[in-house]
Length: 476
Image: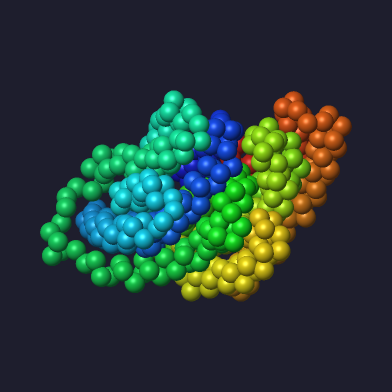
C-alpha cells in the first residue's frame, strides 16, 4: 500500500503540473510570442547542460543509495552529507564555468544570467533523499506550493514580449525556492553533521559519474534538438519544438511517474535479496504503464490540430503536426521507463542501461543534422522517435534472459486495438464537430468511453487482476 500511496501522491502532482501549463502556456505564448518563447527555450536548453554536469548523477544515484541504507540512521546521515557536500562542490565548479560561458557570449547574455538562478538552486536540491526514503508527500507538497507561487507571479508581472527575462527569472527562481524548502524536513531523518574526517566523498565520485553518463546521453536527445534547431534554423523553430515536446512530455509524466516511485522500492527489495519480487513488480507495472500509454499516444495525435489552435494560438499551428508525430514516442519511452528505471537501475545493471541510452544518443546525433536540414523541426521530431525506439529495443534485448518477454507484452495487442479504435472515433468527432473548445471536450469524453469500453470487452487479465486486488485491499 505504501507504493500505491506514493504513486498516488506522485500521479496527483503530475496531474497538477499538467493543469498548470493549460493555464500559463496560452497566456505566455500570446504575450511573449514565438520569438520570446523560443529564446526562453533555447537559453534554458543551454543551462540544462551545466545543471546536468554539476549534478553528476546524484539524483538517481542518491535515490537508489538512500534506499539501500535507509534502515541504518548513522549510515543514512553520512550518506546524505557526503552526497550533499559533493553536489555543492560540483555545482560551484559548474557555475564558475557557466559564468565564463556567459562572459564570452555575444547574444542572450541577460537571459543566460536569469537561467543561472536555476543552476545555483540545483546545489540545494535534495529531493533525491526523500525519494529514496519513499516519502513522496514532502516532495509533492513543496513542489505544488512553489508552482502555485510561480503561476501567480507570471500572471501578475509578465505583460508583454519585453518581459521575457522576467519570465525566465520567475521560472528559475521558483526552482531555487522549491529546492530550499526541502531542507527544514531533514531534521526528522538526519540527526547530525559528521566531522569531515568521517566522510568519504571519493567513494561516490565514480558511481555518480557512471550515473551521469546515461543522463548526459539522454540530454543529447532531450536538449540537443532545441539547441541544434536554434543554431541550424532559428529560435522560432526551437520554440515550436519546445511547445510540442512540452505537451507530449507533460502527458507522458503521468506514465513515467511509476519509475520515480518504484526505483527506491525495487532497490530496497534488491538490497534485501527479494529478486522474485523485483521481477513480479516489473511485469505488473509494465502492463499498468502500457494501458495508459497507448490511449495517451493515440489521443494526443487525434486532437493535436484543435488543441494547438486553442492552446497555443494560430501563430503556433506548425506545432499541431509536430505533436501528432511526436505522440508516437510515448510508447517506447513508457516501455524504456519500466525496464530501465524500474529494473536495470535499481538492480545495478548500469552497463546495460548506459549502453542503451548512449546508443540512442549516437542515433540521434547521426540523424539530427540531415533530418533538421531537410525537414527543419519535423526532422528533430522524427530523429527523437527513432532514437527512443532504439533505446527501448536494446533494453528489451538485455533483459530477455531474466524476464519472459511474453509476460511483459502478452496483452499489448488489446491496449493497441482499444487505442486505435479510440483514435478513429475521436478523429471522426473532431471532423464532424469542427474546431471549437466543445469539440475538445467531446473528443476527450468519447476517447475515454471508447477506450474503457473496448478494454472491458477485451478483458486484459493482468490489469483487471491488479484493479480487483486493489479494490479488495481497500474494502478489507
